[in-house]
Length: 276
Image (cartoon, rainbow, N blue to C red; front, side, top):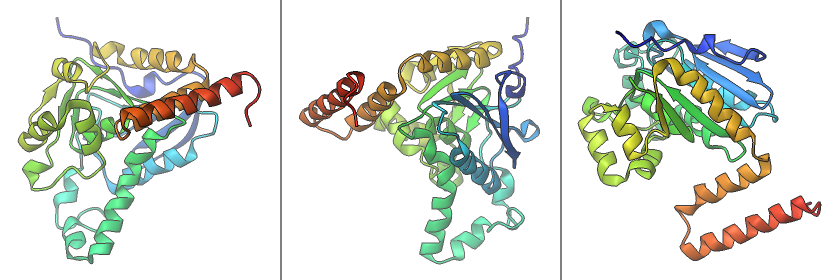
């Protein structure tokens, strides 16, 4: 018997969610402390473009201050198959510089263009948010990097991660290299990127790319359950804990001890009503 198809994200957004905007293949909806960002072009397997990246960056800026958890998902059978192939044509996208145009430009202009694209991938690690990628089917190239941009990843059992940029003569440049190395280590990250091979669900969970693997039909419910569990703890305690863990890789053992003491001091004073 064939396994059930993953449900579309649009079918499983919280009932009380309010749509903030929907444009260029991205929809943002907010339900209290939880926001849902959905990629909404399943006909093209949620392929990405500069317009989509600007919409993702706008979603980050549009989040109300009440939001604590953001769930990222993609409609249809694939989370995101990566960069739209139109980017590799001489014409590129309407109103956008093609790759050839970018290559011919000044260094500063090229750098600024790529930096603008990266903004879609950076806000997911803000210290005041916990972000969850709910990933099914293909998550290739830019799609893989978008999943890596989130703090946590729940994946369907049909997931296929791949970093194909190197095989195209490029490099992963949408902020994915840092979290990939942090999660799986340098040697495995190099092998995954240089070969462009697929990483399937079992391996993704085993090496730390996925926090949880579930059947495709249960993906959205699992993401909602995790979001609810994250909201159960006091917001400031989660913010302080996330900041401690994010900084741990860059600090010495003694510096981390110092950071823990300072953070705990702030929490104790806040709980005692003595915070600023």
